Image (spheres, rainbow, N blue to C red):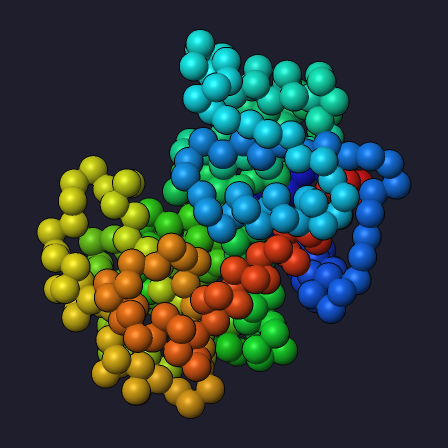
Length: 294
């Protein structure tokens, strides 16, 4: 595994091996590269969780992190993404983590680089490390994915998290459900699961995974107000009371409180939102270990 671009590139065995490594790291296991390694995190979109957890993961593994600031780089002079990455390869960086607003940005890079690339999120395409930490969180809770009812709710059309999770969850044997505004739902997702109204979803799902409304990817502002969206498609306090006894709440964050999820529920007993963030470090340690051991 010289690159980590989408979970579709991996077999189920490889995915489970990554989850096993993440589990070991969560229990205090250590691993360090055989020689000094350098990483650069090229984030062309805003990020708190993904960028910081990759940096923490890199430092925990003894990897030197090379600073990068877009507004102080040659990108402001017209340098291409390809030439930027080739420059870091040339000066001795061993792995590049990239987030970009272009779907499949990595396609123009992978055949011309000798260092591994890790996809930190590409436009509305894929977010494989987020999906892996979601899988790890679900596995911690239920031990298995087989016949688990997982609902993905919200801005599905613009969500790379929705795409990555729906595909891999189906491969792992889960029953996937979708909900949210129908105008934000792609019929192609029906290959992975069925669309249901939110009030039906909350009563049947073992995992309710809510998605952030991605205003930056909408060409027009959503017609609904925040209050209207919350009442029609969000997890209200009333809907939470009708969830299954042992079901959990997830969200890739950042959460629009009182929009996707009621403020009171973001840190309630069944919420795993901050556990997901914590797990992101262990999962990204596992990814880095794998690409640098190739």
